[in-house]
Amino acid sequence: MNSNGLQRCYKAIDECARQRMHSFAFAEAQVVFEKDIQLKLQLLGYRAWFVSSDLKQDVNGETYAVGGLVIAVRLDIHAYCLLSPNELQQWREAENRFLGVGGGSSSGGGPFSGHS
Image (cartoon, rainbow, N blue to C red; front, side, top):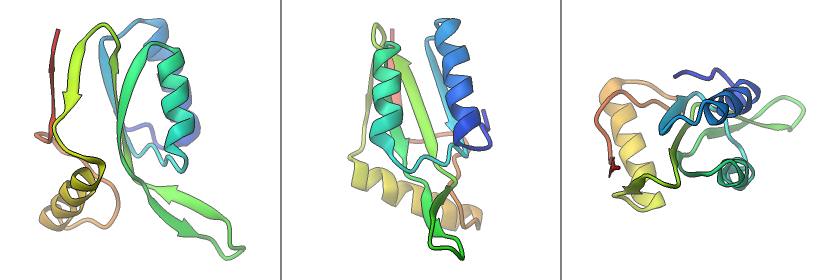
């Protein structure tokens, strides 16, 4: 799903956890501090992987994020990421070049695997 921003991503995570979804992914999560959202997901019973958001600065020097991807899988489901964080970032950059986009993007395929 496209969460269209960090606040909507947090709301969507709460709803997915309330429904005990096995897994979910959010594009355009705009996550700046991955550890914060990872802790939230862990407390809700999920493990998570991220493709980092692009960080930019506004005219006031405030940092904000664009793009990004959050993948979450319930802890009782066997799942793992096939790539290191650095490899994930390289995969994202290569995909963006292929798609001709500048922000975070994920369209099918990818380095994630799992089974229950």
